[in-house]
Image (cartoon, rainbow, N blue to C red; front, side, top):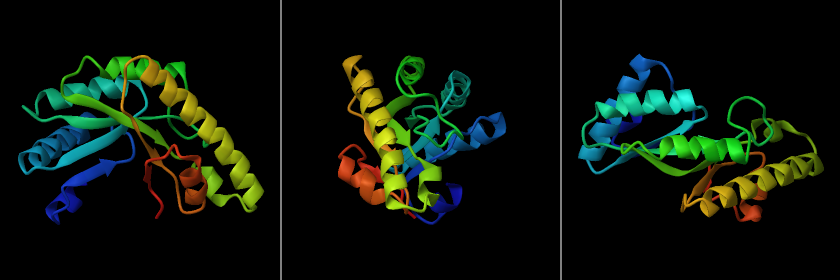
Amino acid sequence: AQALAEAGVNDIYISNEVVAPHKLARVAALAQRLARDGGQLAIAVDSPQGVAALAEAMHHAHGAHIDVFIEIDVGHGRCGVPAGEPALALARAIAPHRALRLAGLQAYHGSAQHQRSPAERQASLAHAAQAVRETRDLLISHGFGPLLVTGAGTGTFALETASGLWGELQAG
């Protein structure tokens, strides 16, 4: 993210969780720098501890804020909170922090990228889309929104696009 900012990119999304305090200090400093230059930094979170650590780091980035995407586990099993109520609990943990702005959901199904048959990918993404829809609708019904859904990948982006749920694709 720092290299991108040095190259002049001013709208950057770190599509993973950062929890180490020294790395979060760098994230906060970058958010402050981008805000000063008219840009924006966003990051994924998937735990209350991660939200608290990010909020603490951003407390020192006076006047800056960071867009936060709740990563939900849509089938990959690597990271992310379960869809539904756990994501709502995380949204509620984000809400009190002025420097954190809930921007949406990170929904990336990495293992679906490597499924060989189109039918397998379609079945995996149907499950992912259901998790995204239910979670997004739950958060909106509790006053959180609008919410951008980001994710997808090279092997499945056509399916995410067809779902009408993903508003940003991360196909490589």
